[in-house]
Length: 102
Image (cartoon, rainbow, N blue to C red; front, side, top):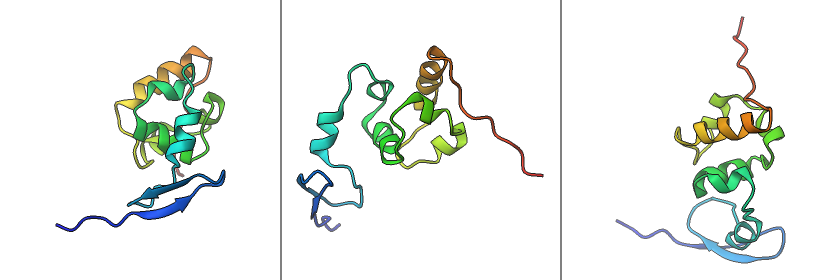
């Protein structure tokens, strides 16, 4: 088993960090952006990063996606869906309805 080589990365805000994967999330920015009242704070770190990487930081933006699309994001697991549904409903939103292909 070989160890993954860590690569120096610099985020858009100039923070330097090392990652062994292609994950673009800056740990400094992630720490700074943790919002205690946000629906994102109720999710696991991988699920939160999956949404943030897709630019989904509000429930309104989340409501533009179907459950299937959200579950397809790397880092998003099925245990996050009930949390997201509850938070969407609390603010009067829901997941986008899937339209069948004709």
